[in-house]
Image (cartoon, rainbow, N blue to C red; front, top):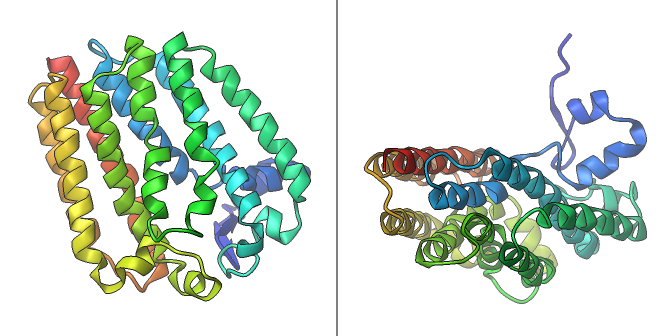
Amino acid sequence: MKVMEQTLAGDIPIGNWVDRHLPTRLRPYARLMRLDRPIGTWLLLLPGWWSLAMASEGWPDWKLMLFFGVGAMIMRGAGCTFNDWADRDFDSKVERTKVRPIPSGAISPNLALLFLAFELTVGLAILLQFNSFAILVGAASLLLVFPYPYMKRITYWPQAWLGLTFNWGALLGWAAVTGALSWPPMILYVAGLFWTLGYDTIYAHQDKEDDALIGVKSTALRLGGHTRPWLLVFFALAVLLIGLSGWLAGLAWPFFLFLGAAWLQSLWQVSDLEIDDSADCLQKFKSNRLFGWLVLAGIIAGRVMA
C-alpha cells in the first residue's frame, strides 16, 4: 500500500521517503537539510544551470551540471542548517516551524553546528573541482549566506538579500565554464534577484501573522494588500532582464518563445494567488520550478540553435 504524504503540525511532511528508507537517527538531519522538500534546491540550482547553459557552446557540460546539482543540494542544506540554528528561538514560537529539528529538540544547537561544518566541507570538495576563478566566486557567496538569517530582524526586505544569495549560481555557472565574468551573467544575476523577490514574497505570506507577532520582518508585511501589483513588477523585471541577458549572449529565437511561456506562468501565479491562503501561497511558490525549467529549456534551445 502506498503511504500518503501528510503534514505534521507544521511544515514537515511525514510518511515520505525519509520515513520509509532512512534510519531513525538520520531522519532529523535529512529534514534539517530539507531533503524531503526539494523545491528550495531547485530554486537555488536553476540560476546556476541557466548560466552554465548560456555560457556553453551547444549543449551544456553534463559533468558541470551534475556538480552544480549536488552542490546546490549540499549548500541549500547548509543554508537551512545555519538558518534554523540562527532562528531557533523564533521558530519555536511559530506554528509552522516549531516542529523543525532544532526547535523541537531532535538536534541540539551544537550538533547542528557540527553538521554545518560537515556540509561546508563537502561543498568545498565540490567547489574545488572548478577552475581557480570559479572557486573564488563560489567562496565569496558565503559572505551573503551567513548574514541572511539576521536580515529579517533589521529590514522588511530580507527577500532581497535571499535573492542576492540564492542566485549566486548565475555568476558561478558562467565562471565555471569561461573562467571569467561578463555582462550576460551579471544581468542574469540581477534578474534572479527580482525572481526571488517574487516567489519568496509569496512564500512569506504564509507566516505574516506569526511574523508580526514575534517582530520578524518580510516583504509580505511591508507590501500587504499591495502585494499583487508589486509581484507583477518583480516578475516582469525578472523576465525582461533574463531576455536581455540571453540577447547579449547571442541566444537564438527559441529562447524568447520559452521565456514568453515563463512570463505567462508568472502572470498565472499573480492572477490566481490568494495571499491569505497559506496552502495556495505554498502551491504558487512551488510552481516557480516550472518557471525555472521553462527558462532553462529556452536557454538550451537558444544556444543549440545559435
